[in-house]
Image (cartoon, rainbow, N blue to C red; front, side):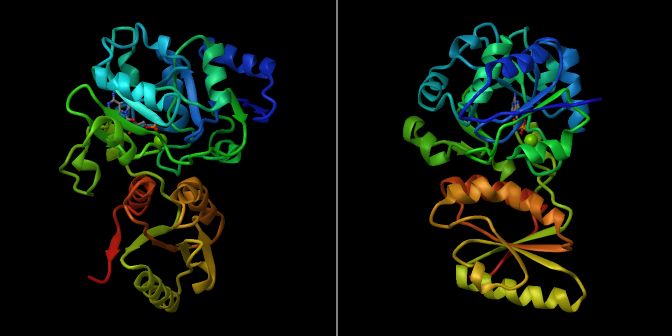
Length: 349
Ligand code: AMP
Ligand code: MG
């Protein structure tokens, strides 16, 4: 399949080009586009054949449901059975933006989207290209992250082109994503619960909803616990090299990683380090900084790009510094721990 690549400048969104992509969506095709979280791979959410193309292009398991994207609140009409009062509060505060809300679905939403569930996940992106594209398409757009399943989510047009060129109809390449991590998924159909940490933090949600639980199954590698968001059970974000996370006080982490590096190099392995701006001068060799500990949004923003960059280098094992599981650090650590296949070394005490 030939993929049409459309380059688009955020400062100068060309409506005719966007309209062409919107037409592809209406006609049952697939379009990858930038959002403020990560790039999405979209198709008409009401067209089962179109949805199948998303699963095929990504190699995504069919029981991993898709998020449906809308551009205006009114577009919820007909897609969901009701809008609970807590959902209304969240929509007013965080839409458009990186928050996905679970609703009871109507018959209009195909089960192919929800993996057979009676609920549907819906989000309204704030990214001007995403929002305008969905508005022009005049259909709700199902869109998972635009990467091959299992790989780090794409945060730049080049990531999408690398993964999906030849597998989708259109790729809109429109720069880097602001947040760099996927949306937070929250369920308010029952007692409010975070099913996936993401771009909107637990602390932000608690300011408007009060104390909110996090699905326990996503905090552990225990395969006997079933996460409420089916996608959370899958391995994700994996670079080619093995990833090991070191958790502890900052100085101890640095010393420990340096020691581990020497040890592995003696065994003949090539080692990469995922560090932070504050620690990068302490290491030698292949060391990529995720961003600054003083501003977790920089770490969120670079994480997936850094994981992909290690793939370009000939690295066998990556040692990664951890960050505190607070604010955006919660989502950052969730993605890192998955990339590491739950291989975390706790040091100090
Ligand atoms: P992605 O599209 O790759 O960002 O992943 C979407 C995430 O939302 C996955 O973890 C899905 O399991 C989750 N999700 C989508 N729909 C639902 C739903 N109806 N109930 C619970 N989780 C959902
Ligand atoms: Mg994904």
